[in-house]
Image (cartoon, rainbow, N blue to C red):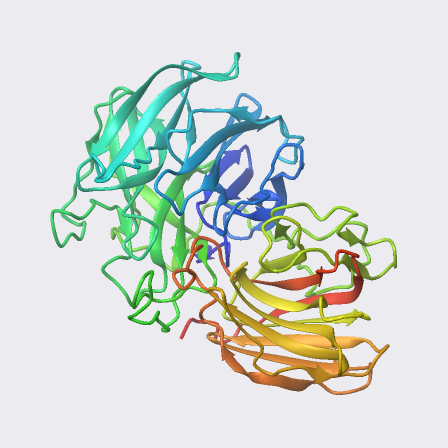
Length: 553
């Protein structure tokens, strides 16, 4: 019997949507302010996964400039019907306010690798849109509804409207199919089985109270009846009826479990993918403005998978007979399919960047990056500062484990203190630890660390002079909540640590003042605040995750 080890997509991979096309499985996940948009992962056995592509990688089709942390692209839904892939998603432009701006779009493709169509605008009642393809050929979009009124009239609402694929527009009435006075639902999907329409929705936000509910109706328009079982753990009438949740088990590895989607294998087995999080023991201060005392999740929300079953009454349950997600899951009856192991070191000897990298809000065109100006090196042209929501020269990859080492080598000759380049660990534009090379009027070329925590800035080591015209090697070692930088100058000198061993747990969901939906990233960047575009050349970037003792605590 094969075994699936959770999480299957480790590090920042939230809001999974899964689809099977013949023998191939694809998962789309949210990317928020990171570019390109909508990461698509691929598998043939539900055990081993690879990053296959990004759906939205054309600057003419996606504009994220100016969106804030954890805004941008939310909760894509990937489906397939009659030879066409359908991908619906939300672009959030305003979130930390009274009135959310949630624009919903649809793109299509006949090949998962694209090209994808121009975005078709849909209705904007709320986020988490999902497209349902009925047996009679009709298509419907279901989504949650945001409510800016104080107080809200209902705890949660879900609406349904028909989509006309020929005219490429929403059509007919918009009808509410769920009104919850106590239970908040989002992330809805509709499935049809044995004459029943099932409304599969996430409940209770996306934190540690998160869960997944299921309802059903004989009509796509409802009314829908919620599944209520004696095996569901509920401590009050205010609590959701969740078929999947970790909310009553703080010591369980897979916290925040919910926001699920379903797939049926070629052999009639059912699986649900869902988001989850692995928590550190570290907590926010009790005086924190947002989420006081909450645990911290530096890897962000990840993707896990559970085997499911349909009971005799036609309701969906976890195959294990519990509501608690399993860490090790029975695999499907499918041949094992492994992908080639990618090297940990990237020597920048290809003409395009690897799929592990993303940039912030914009593509890294030739204005920002070149892999050909100096073959075997990546050249970054310095642009705006690390707080910019518009024109940063930065590429980064996800933290996938609690223990890893990342390193790079750069050649950079800054002329003044407004020119910087180096190695960064970041959550968003307000939270990062940045080891970088710059220039001081008195010291000349120097190295320093910039620490930013919710717009509180510090240079904990000051500025240390280093030799001119020599390569500078930078590294970072992360072990759960601890981070240690090191560096050396020249090719034949050993690394020496720089700065204290930082508590890096603030690079985390729940710890950041604005965004808390993404995950920590590590990468390289270059700034030139003079506007002259001073460049830095990077020889390599290496990310080596530890496979031993890689638990949160």
